[in-house]
Structure formats: C-alpha cells, structure tokens
Image 1 (cartoon, rainbow, N blue to C red):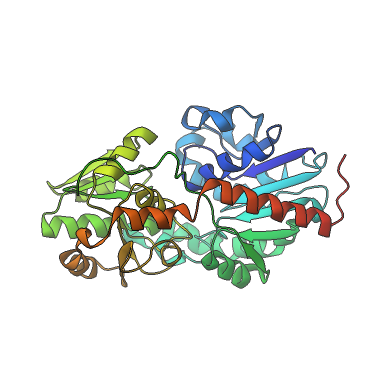
Image 2: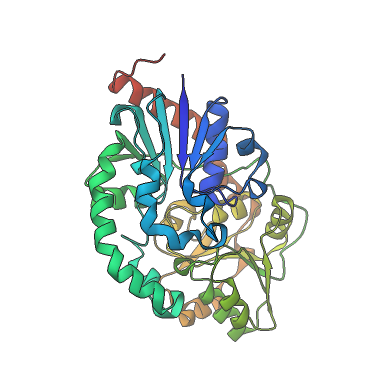
Length: 369
C-alpha cells in the first residue's frame, strides 16, 4: 500500500510528533509531508522516512517565526501532490487535515485538535498580555476568514478520529462531524519508576505558548517559595524567565533520558493547561509520580482524582496556590500511578489505530495497488 502522512510541522518532539513516531512503524515505507522541517530536532524514527517540505520553509526567518505565516498555511497545504497515494493519514492540529488526497475516501485524519487559536483557545491567543498587541490585532482580523476556510475544507478528510472525548466534542462543534476516539500512546517501556524517594521539587513540562498557562505554576511557586523545574521552550519562554523567582529553574528542552530522570526525581507534575489530551501527565504517572492538574479537558481522561493525582478547577494563581497547600504527594502510590499509565501503552494504540484504518478502507472500498 502506498501511504503518506501529513503533519503540520516537524520542529521538535512534542506530543503530536510522538504520535507520528508511534504510527510510522505500521507503514515503514510511508512518505511524510510537512510545512516546516528541522531534522536535527526530530527523532531518528521520523528522519528515516522521505520528508517533503512546503515552499514556506524557504522564506526568510521561517524557522523561528513560522507561526506568523499562518495566513499562508491554507495555500501551502493545498500544494502537496498526494493523488498517487492509496492512503493519506493526516496528524493534524492546524491545517494538515485540509491536505487534498485523490479523494476524501483516501484521507483519514487523526485530529489532535481543530485549530486552537480559531476555536477552543481564542481568548488565550488573543490576550495582549500573553501574545502582544500585534498578534491580538492579527487574530481579530484573520480569525473569521480562517474559521470559514477551516470549516469549508474539513470535507477533504473522509473520516476524523479524535485523540480524546474532549477533541471529539470540539470536532463536532467546529465541523459537525462524528469521530471515533483513540487515545494516543505513552512510552511505558521507556518511562518507568526509578529508585528515588519522593522528590523535593515540582515539575512542569510544556511548550511556552499562551494556552499552556505556565505563568500560573511560576506565580504559585514564587508565592509559596516552592522549588519548580520547567522543561520546555517556545515563543513565550523569555517572558516566563523574567517572571521566575529564585525557586524556579527553567531548563529549556532536555533529552528524553534527562526528562525521565526529572520525572523520577520530582514530587509531582504540575499541569496547568486545558489540554486536548496531554502526554506529560501520563509520562509522569508511568514514572510513578502523581499529577496536580487543571480539571478540564484531557486531564480528566488521563488522571484519576484521589488515586493518581488531584485537580484545581480555575486557571488562577490563587486557586493553584491553595491546591498546592493541600497537595500531599505521599497519598499517591507509584504502583497506582503506573497502572493507570499502562492503560495508554503504545501497543494498544497501534492495534486500535490499525483496526480503525482497516475499517475505513473497507467502508470506502479503497482499491489498494
């Protein structure tokens, strides 16, 4: 079978890229199409495949300022020539779902989320404090036309599959489309408990974009003088660095091995966003650590309140402060945390995804060359 994957951009190993990495062994000869590609930041599993990149990559400053090229994404995704493939699988959180296969019957979309900055996270991305006045004005001008384009082109995918019940609801609201839910994988073979006792620091693992709300964790730990280590990078990290008090350490991106040791050594993971699903809470639990999470979105599907973690229910620093005051990491056992993570293992994901693809091909009577 001639298969192609379409991924919005490949410039770091975040949750979406780890999903792609887990899917590629199912189709080892598949090609990959993406808007932007930085191979030095991508895993060897992905680099082994033929990667086709959009013309946007050649624009000056595209590597660092690619998000500012959002108005050009609809044009760029349409340029990929995919008609020769029996099956196109888009892994989409932006425009990948709008790639044009030979027909919708040949295009299966695994949706990480409809574009957050157009649908579910408009307030975060248009907040001047978070993103700046120019970004706020730009989204105000472009939001309507981009939403109309997004809604009009969702038909290019013959079927949607969602990463969580939260995303299935968003797909229904944005596109009026049903979707099966297949939870993405966590690498429970790599992420395992260590021998360290309860750690002395809290940990946050996230890219520094507005909706992640890392500022809440910093403000709370500044106030309570609690040690906090932050793993991540992104356009908002300089602002967060200025906010960080003497107990907050921003580490930037680290290797997988370093991240595993940070999970193993922490007291708990602080998870502040309303996330689509969220891999970090499951990686922490796989390492035997509990999670203190904002009680909306995907965290409600990955953290068991009172057994593998606890929730706070408003994205305000004073609410997180109170939650931290009452959080007792010792009430949660490493065995319970890991048992919950094991429900989301990679083999389960691959089997469910392959079965979903087989049903899609049969339902659409796709003739495989």
